[in-house]
Image 1 (cartoon, rainbow, N blue to C red):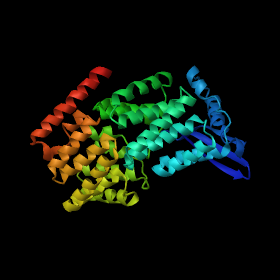
Image 2: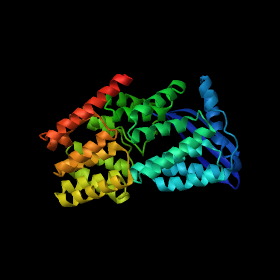
Image 3: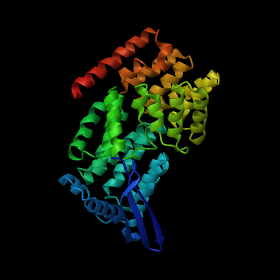
Length: 396
């Protein structure tokens, strides 16, 4: 059942009144509602109080592991917790450098709070990939995850976010066992299902990826809503379903890019170009926005300008050690569309060798059609197929 928790608050000096309600999205029925009066200094207790009220109001039965996870966190510095919340919010808005700054302030004020370190690691990973900050940010992410797990060895968030880093840096075979282990103890963890979908997608397990992503959104309709998309729909050729799955928001650079990408696959080039241009205007340094702008140039038959932005992007990726081979694959697609076959094959090889080997998608991807007559493409397809089949044997 799809449910949505909404709420608002009124602050009067050091006093907060928080009202919230749990809604069944399909029927729009209110399943539960309540209010809490709390001192601002006790802000950390709000999450726990709301969770306990919902459990009591719905008469839910929890597993021992779930009960343990819902135990109140120890008291921390209220300023540190506010920095933490601001950092999490900035991450959801795709402002990864600002999220890092807020979470670093939180960690400085309260260095023993494991959740801050986990989310700091996630922000570093995103900055490494999306902003092309590269290897130093991946290293910072790993250090943050290790710090979180040193404080709290069973910390679920740190394990999930670290699995994302494994996938992004070519170690999807390491990510899957971590995520499956998390789901054995917390089977309704939406983010773990989402990251497992992400890992399966890299390995070309497209139906399995789709199923995990749908399960994640059933459990939490808001999971990764503005920072990730169900690309498995796209890779399966289900373009209408892909576009329907995107939130109707215009201030997320990733959503604008992917909306354009969906339209591009539907051959609605004018709408695609408008979305690509809007994404680039929102955040011109983001990897996906740069790919979208190159495709927009291709639509406008300004190939030289499109190739320039791709060459500049590829150079940054090489110099900085950027991971995320799925995003790098999109550079190969854009090169192919713009007619630079040599560059398309070079970047495609890099994508496969660094961990994106979605062979069932590659074999049918319409954006690679300009390369189908190239002998090197056959070699690369064999490379992707072998690793895809090895992954299937190992995990299915």
